[in-house]
Length: 151
Image (cartoon, rainbow, N blue to C red):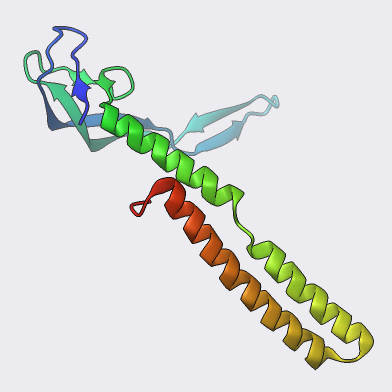
């Protein structure tokens, strides 16, 4: 877990708290026009909405800490983020399902054109399933080799 640093007092002691935040909500407007053609709008149902939010506060001076500025990530958190980004990039780059489905559609189309739709679609389906199974096994092997079993 990273550390919080208070910008006011420099303390590293923080706690989770809650606070009420007011939010101004503007309602709909009604348009009015007088006999001279001048129009103006009058807001209706304006109001303030109060929400209870979870925040992190400094234990010494009790100010709200900003997660973007006052939080320093630990090396473990940084490593986890890099690992998650690498895994996502690996998965995005190595997907081959569209190739197998494209081959199935091609075989079905050839079968329909030739009038032998059962044979070519059956062959296409079989080849597509075998291709996807082998592709899945290869991708699992490459994934485990690169990232280990934890992934």
